[in-house]
Each structure stands twice: as structure tokens, then as C-alpha cells.
Length: 211
Image (cartoon, rainbow, N blue to C red; front, side, top):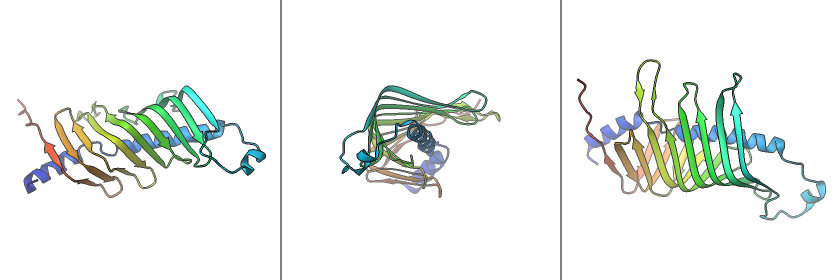
């Protein structure tokens, strides 16, 4: 890309909700905590047995919701089937669907064909047509925040380091008009850096002049 285009991409990206997968990590952490507290205890005999990669419990057509102190919905996770594997202490969820609201009421949704969450909810992997969307919102100051969308066949989310990675092609969409694609991506929310690797392409739609 030319330096001028790189500068424009950086400015556009600064306004994108690139850290929106981190919101989902918080949801997953809360869900994992809920599941651990409500999972039946395993007998000592079972614990002594050599672990195998076989699920020890299932959940089908389940939904977990988290509400705030005022009774407003904060987040929800839905799955067609969930399986817990004791050898890796991971939770695998088919057809995972997530939605979460921030303090301003802005909705973030995520979905994929399969999700894998570790024991403490610090890592989540989304496989098979992963899509994360942060809907548009008009702030109290009258600023319009555009809809942002992230698409890939794989997204790896790290809550503790606030990073999002994928080694597969990724597409970033802002406002339904600006699009960026890359073969690999690493986003670090703590230092605010974004790395798009491989063949990187960007298309910025012209802005309409204000009357």
C-alpha cells in the first residue's frame, strides 16, 4: 500500500471497534464460571482414572443469560450442544451464538459453527465461519458510531493479554462500505497495534460531503 493509503487505513481502523472480540471473551468467562459452579462434582474414583478425550457431560439446546443489578440483559450465550472434556478441561460448543451489551447499550454479537473455551475462560477459539459484529450506535454526544464486522474461518481470543489472532484469511468491514482483507491478523488491544500480514487489500468508499 502507498503511505497515504496506509495512513487512511490506520485512521479508519482507529475508529473501528477492533477490540469487540474482547467483549465476547468477557461473556465467555462469565459463562464458563457459571458452568463450573453448576457442574455436578466428579467422584474420586473417576478422578483417579487415566483421563481420555471423552466428554464427561453434555448440554443440548442451552442458553445462559447474565443480567445486571437492574434486571437488564447484559449478555447471553446459546449453543446447540456443549461438551466438556476433562482431560483438557475445555468446553466445546456447537453453533455458538453470543450477544452482549456495553454500558451505552451497544450490541455486540458473535457466532461460529464451533467454539472451544478453556477452563478459566481466558482463551476462546471460534471455528467455521466466525463472525463478530458491533452494531451501529448514536452516542449521547450525538456521534454516530458505524457498524463494524470481523469475519474469518478462525479467531483465537486471549482475554488476559487482550489479543485476537488468526492465521487464516480475515475480512474487516466498517459501516458496510470500507473493507480490508488480509491473510493473517494479530490485534493487541493493550498497546493498540494491528498487524495485517500476507496479501493486504483495502477499499475505502468515498465520503459524502455534509450539506
